[in-house]
Picture 1 (cartoon, one colour):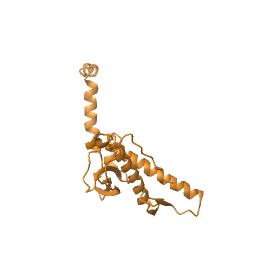
Picture 2 (spheres, helix red, strand yellow):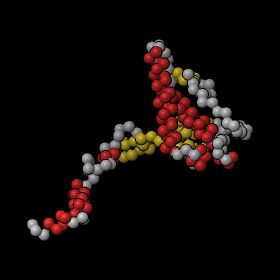
Picture 3 (spheres, rainbow, N blue to C red):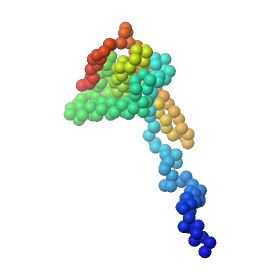
Picture 4 (cartoon, rainbow, N blue to C red):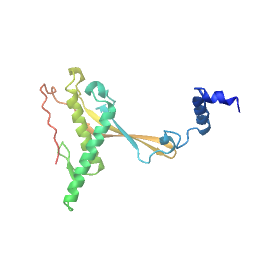
Length: 188
């Protein structure tokens, strides 16, 4: 076909070919970069946010300079660190009962919720300490909660569930003054 020869040499031909192919193929795997929509993970997607003592979300970046995604990553990192520590203790001593002493002195078995609570408390303390490095009106002196939200696919629909994993009480008196002397306590 002689009339198609100039069209094939034209710079718009690849774009037109791409548009036609995209319309014919559609958004089907493996042609779609969004396979999560057609095949969601069986594991729930989890993220965390900071709330005040009454459960109202707080603007984390305003108070601490940390983005919300970073809080979730830090929480997961602390949780993995604590779980691995318990696993090492268990392999070192077969009769070891995995326990974790929470910062308030409460002794708990190192089940999933205890590990989540311990790592959540580490995150809340860290965020409170970060807020003290900001201007006075940004200090997080009230009660704090770390809320974990899990989004999962059940019965062909998305289900969202939230739970408070850690609570930090309000600070009594004035917050510490510079220089800040915070110790990173690592429970053994």
